[in-house]
Length: 288
Image (cartoon, rainbow, N blue to C red; front, side, top):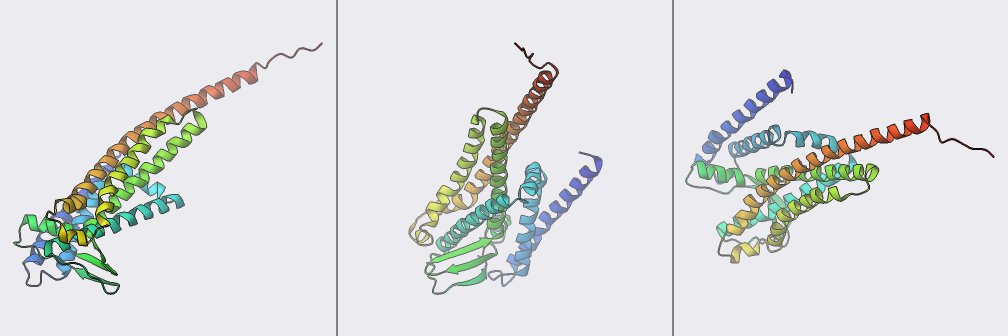
C-alpha cells in the first residue's frame, strides 16, 4: 500500500470516527426531547450517522479486501441477482423479528386491516448510553403493514447487518465458483471446493434457520412467549456471529484460491515446457 492510499485510509477512518462520535449527542438530544416517542429528524440522523460509520469502518479495516471483491463481483448479472436476493431475504426476516420484539415489549398484537407504510420509534427511558445503543438497534423504523397480521419493521441496523452479510455471502459464493473453475480446467478433482462451499452453506443456514422459524410465528409468538431472549438473540447475536463466521470462511477461501492459482500456474508452465520439448524433438517417422 503506497503513501497516498495510507493517507486516504486514515482520512476516511477519521471522518467515520467523527461521524460515530457525533451520533451519540444527536441521539441524546432526540431522546431527551418531549416528542422522543415520535419519529425525529435528530433521532434518524443519529442512527444513520452511527450505522454509516460502523459499516464504513467494517469495510475499511476487517473487510477491506472483501469490499474490493464485492465491487468486482457486483458488476456481473449473477452477482446482482445473488446479492439482491439474499439482501431481500435478510431484510424481510429481520424486519419480522424486530416487529416481534416491539410486540413483545408492549404486548400488543399487530392486527393489520390494510397495507400501509409508516415511520415509528420505540421510546427508551431513562436516557443513558445503554438506551441510546438500544435506540440505534431499533429506531427509527419503517413499518410496512401487510394484511392480515404481518408487519416488517426495517431499522438502520436491519439494513446494515443485512448488507454486510449479503456482501460476505456473495463474495464467498463467487470465490468458490472461481476455485471450481480452476479445478475444472487444470485439475482432476474438485474436492478443494467442498470445504469453502460448506462454510458458506453453514454460515447462511445458521443465520437463517432461527429467524425463519421465528418469522413463521411472528407476530403472535411474541405475545404468548414469556422471555424475549430468543428474539434478541435472533436479532443481534445470530447475524453478528454469522458475519464473523463468513468473514473467517472468506479468509480460508481466499487462501485456498491463492494456492490453487499457484498450482494451476505451475501445471501450465509444465504443460508448455512439455509442448515445447515435443515440438523441438518430434517422434521419428520410419518408412518401409
